[in-house]
Image: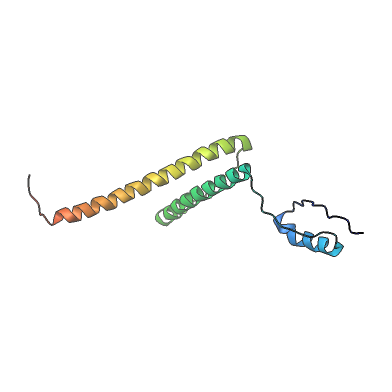
Length: 128
């Protein structure tokens, strides 16, 4: 008599996945089916992580440029309490990304003004 199979969900950390699969395979009682799961909370966290990594990349480029120009100074990172860190980090991330957007807009404007200047130079200098 063949009994119907029951479904179970196993949540395993990525780094322990292979080891867990080998153990389950040796038991021979589980057929594996992998599912990708997402949720609203996970999406928000992944978006937040991407924003933080983006702002860190921007800040690291400024630190690298500053080290080239000035004497190297030791950078000290202090860890804050979790409740202050989240609120403070989000506002800092938002400011860094906003400043980066403003810088890009200003650089684009500078390029456009440079083109306009080059175009107008052909006319020479005159007093309207």
